[in-house]
Image 1 (cartoon, rainbow, N blue to C red):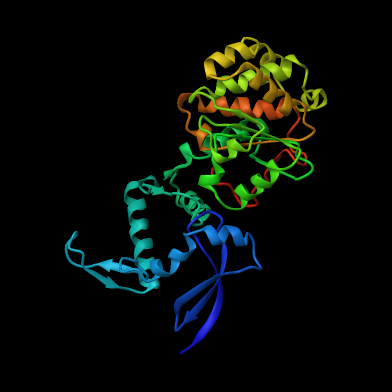
Image 2 (cartoon, rainbow, N blue to C red):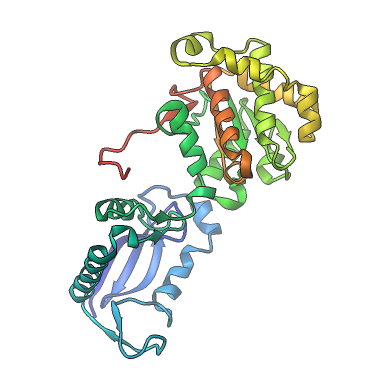
Length: 340
């Protein structure tokens, strides 16, 4: 029996944690965490039930491990095994014929979460000539990406640096349940520091329970709250004037637009206490470095999703919390030809 150890990764969530697989005669018989590679954390892996499912899934009766081609009538559930070369050549020939007859737009694709590498699929669709790449993006981070790009020219990501970030907003995301991994652990540690933690969520989640300020915003009123925070920050001159003068356009129009969004008005609209709105705004505006993380709770607020993200971008901009350590930094641009 030939036995070897190979490096591999679990793909049951986006972290793709590293493992060492024991392979016997080509079959994976055991998995152990690889302590040498990110994002190893003994506590996280001890509490995760997903990675243990890999062994059962790999040998599951319903798993397709080889290319199969249908034989007989459609729906007959009869298949024959073919080689990868046969399968790829067959697929390429069929796609080419469809594109020649109907145009490349006849092909569509759909993606789910980040458990597989989907950027090559985007590029393939681009090279094939079809824009019909569908997925969950419309209700999952794409709204933020679009508004980030419109505001800053590219996307931004929170750069939470211990000892540097002295205010952190967690808006519409529940990392204790949806992540429960490296990010959640880092937030627990952050909450134990002198830095301020503000959580905006209708429910008292586990991260909300750790917050210095919890804003249980009425669902669907996030944009009103963001404009109310801007009202306080601009009204109390907690603005980074140097950044605004150098990089921002339309500040005067923004200042005029948020005038009606007083703490009392926003408190009534959002179901909050006016003093909590003011306190949260001051924490963000007075911070030397403030970061803001938003999630699906904002991406799925319906018709107001674009203006909500635009207002959140404005919060970062007027306080100068853009592209400096401990704030929200511009993500590095891709080095490949874009799909657009």
